[in-house]
Length: 128
Image 1: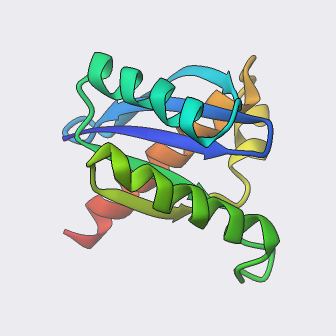
Image 2: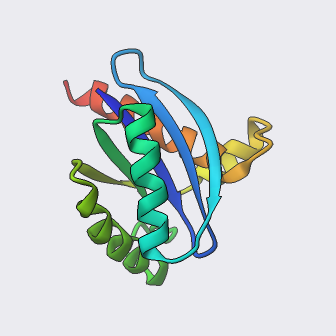
């Protein structure tokens, strides 16, 4: 399966794409938020162009692993993204931006989405 990872913020959405078979992800780009309808239209085009089978959306839990204000906002975004007609996995995104910075990512949001997707693939391999 091919997945699109989203690092959803208030102003931007970092994107990465990857194949579960290989467990590899690559950053795509970061898009500027323009409102939910415009954001979903942009994502619909990317999903089509990248032939994506599922979405992985980073859930920004607090350091204790609990749902905080931003996580509530991301869950609301994820509900709206269901209109894209793809399966959605919400995944803990703690420390993905720090890891992207450690790796030297030039686009931290897309880099964080890449780390998120790689973590998602690793978690699925551990469960099988």
